[in-house]
Image (cartoon, rainbow, N blue to C red; front, side):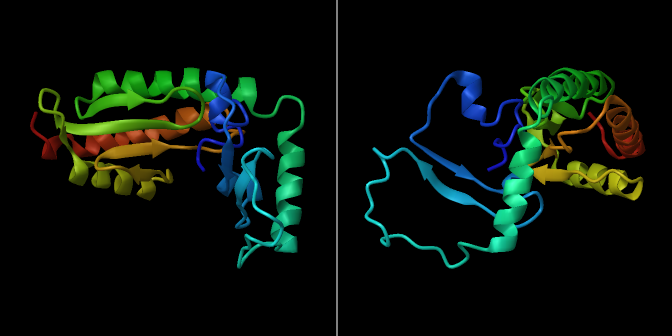
Amino acid sequence: MQSGCYRTGTFLASEQFGVVPDIVCLSKALGGGFPLGGVTVASDEVMTWPPGSHASTFGGNNVACAAGLATLTVMDQPGFGGEHVTRMGGEYLTGKLRALQKQHEMIGDVRGGMGLMIGAELVTDHTTKMPATMERNRVLTEAYHRGLTMLPAGVSVIRFCPPLVIEKQQIDTGMEILDHSFQLLKPMVTM
């Protein structure tokens, strides 16, 4: 759900690897903020159910479908997604996070980098890779109080999934806030 709709630089993450999926599930970004999902987008060879054998309680919401069509129209515009997402995420944001990793020992790993879907794992010890869950939560809270909203993922990962139209100045501002949040935490952590 999160790797579709240009999040990784191509419409579907599978395109990054030359994979043609049999079934695709789409949601979240597809509705442009409205609850909308395409649960079974599949080829005729896979979808052999006769008409009426599958239904959805929430299927056919006209407002959400209209929002989805409008969202797809925007995504279809020249210059949307693709190169911008790869440049801002895979190159710029990932580079900024790797620079912070050199300054803050708590950042154990920076993963992703295909587009604007990146994770920074926090650890209390680089040798054992012991997760720094409480510290991650404190960093998220400190950043939030300074205007940067991020989400946790897994045990001790900070997830970076900013808007696909983000620009360098906005990334710089976010990374300054994140850096400051880590600095506030340093007295609590012993490596």
